[in-house]
Image (cartoon, rainbow, N blue to C red; front, side, top):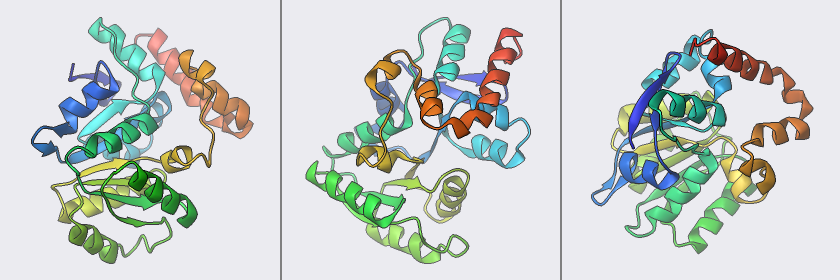
Length: 240
């Protein structure tokens, strides 16, 4: 599909499936398309209205994909066709598997040492060409050595799990020196991939209610859900 839709002030790419996203915006027969991918959900769109740093991050990203069902739903209404929701953890895992055929070099960053080491080892068993990794406990104010390591590794895909906005800030700093790489902020994806954190059961995923499962599992998230209510309100008003 590969069209874009503005949801409020955020331009989001529309795809018919996860494979469509990978094959049209990330990976081609010629190799990786350089850029920066960021997941977009309703909470992020509302937060960007008052958070200048977040708005700048979203503006600079070259691929913004609909991670939240509320975003893909509104996009579908605007385009008058179905738009797939692209869960970030699924997109990352599918991309890792896709990279095997051409042995695209991958570099992993973020999370605790035991989590990222387990992630690396699991990917290696799947024949993913992992050329380096770094846990999330490095000097964020002086990432020069890590950037040098990425450069020396020859990585073409770099996935960064530092939480937002730290992961995006690192990505854009790294991109200044190494622009010919595909970067992806992946949040808690390594934890899900290694089974350290349970993803919502299939029942919730099929109903597109992963957000509800997370809220039930972590009631402290209730504050963040106010942005979801604002998003729904603005949609019903036709203000998105």
